[in-house]
Length: 271
Image (cartoon, rainbow, N blue to C red; front, top):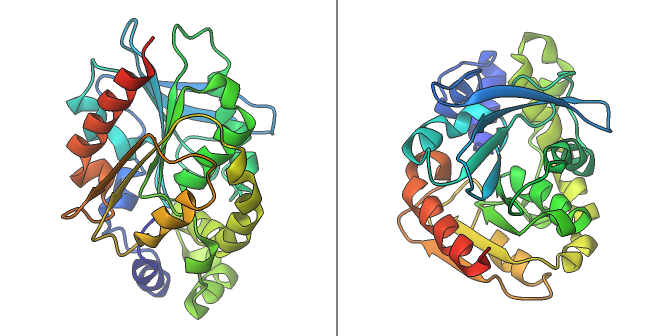
């Protein structure tokens, strides 16, 4: 998720494409990864990038808002052979169809669950970044038997930290001048507080290992989201890395930190 300030400015300026998060969301291919599609049980055709590594544990990457599978392109290139990477386009973004905004985090999770229906040698790790964090939480709650662990990376979890700016309401009314990705981001961000309230009682139902990665300087999704999450889990995270010099840009600026956490988590999980 990007700063509300950028959302406001983009709404005012008609969706200026000056933010690297938004530009990256438009990536439709990758030099090493294959673009794939899968039908889901909730009416979406899910698009994702897959970079296979034989006999390695799958890791499913869920982007923020706005965004897309391409947000992880440089990350995939850097660590191509260590894990079996799958980077999804959440409903409303990238190549996933239809392209309407999907405010239900649970439905988004059910769409992504379609990639779990494989005969994996090892159960996958789910990484939920920013708004992808609560989507990953729904997967952990409702598909925990199919998942090895979940990583909350700069995850937006606390409904008390969400608010709606007046300019967002204007942007939703006058949406015709906005690019679809930004329009859909605005719609889902406006609904996020209520969606997180619905998720709150379910967090105690997560019974698989949880890891947390967060930047201490994150102004987009404040560090308080970590204590909120910990207070509602039945067990402490097996790994918790709070990085003093990191802001919100984990897919770009926190690549080493995320990869090292995944390596450590994979070692703890074993085969």
